[in-house]
Length: 476
Image (cartoon, rainbow, N blue to C red):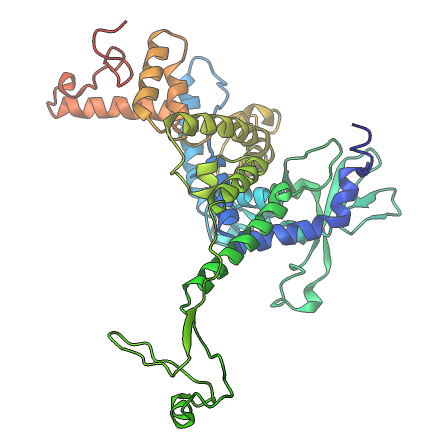
């Protein structure tokens, strides 16, 4: 072991040092692959679609101030939820998407750059917004990784982030414009200090004390680049093999065996003799001439297996299932697809709640409530004295579709019947607010009764005791 590893001396530098030394290069390579490599961009979309999908939605839990009137809290919830829905359409400072589109953009940046920034942009009352608040997305390049220095007040700037003496984040020093955008004026490329209270830094740190994010593609960049070059070489090989080339050989090119006049007549404008290839054409060669065709080497039988094993390694580095990242479902069946999805979704579920909800959704809800109360749009009794009680929100991720939804429905119904799972949790796993669903069901039933519709006729049947494909009728 010692002999085999004697030449391997890895760096013991902290991840912050490595990011400052090569973080910009790694990020540039990751973005290049996402723009130009089909596997990379598909992996990006697979990650974002499974992490946030159509959006992680809030279920607000307002406090019950008067226990004799719980309906007041329910009515307040309706007002706040409607206000939230109206504001989500106006949340983007660029006006390109809504709040849930910002979530998707943040998920894409989390994959590509390992981090992104969301800046709070308060607005004037006469801007006409539902709540005077908007959000501005800032990519990783807007914060200079090389900007590190000590300040006179005892604070220290590390990779663009200002920390106080006890290590708390005080401010972010952003570029006024993207440093790689040549359409911006050079004079606008100055640093702007933004208080940390107005900035959300979304990242999933790999090590303790990590300041900046690292692209999730880092471990796969080399393999993706080399595989792309290999695929290009094989495409060129196939292209060359498809070219039908003829070579005429002569035993005595300078001898007296050939008709010089016929040879000159057969030459093209560039002085090279040509042979016409036409359907049904019988070509007569001169005495002693022979025709040979080119036979370039083919790809060989190892191309598929080599490419597959390389893509498996890339998917392992990205933490994504093979079929989802590559789009190749030929090798997929029910069992291995489900096993791969379960493993990937366990990881993504941890990111949903530990990163997207904790770092992005929760503080934005607080910004929203603060702005709505200060603006007078939302009346929350006692908010100034106890704001924390109004910030309790259950964030519901979008539903994950399964390969065989019938079996999952059967399992959920059985769990509810056995009282091992609440029906409200089943509804929330579908991506809905259980209170809203129950209320809508009650309204639908009341409306059907008013129209004289028999509810027993349309009531769905139970699937618990129904035979499945894996359990024939009469089996135990």
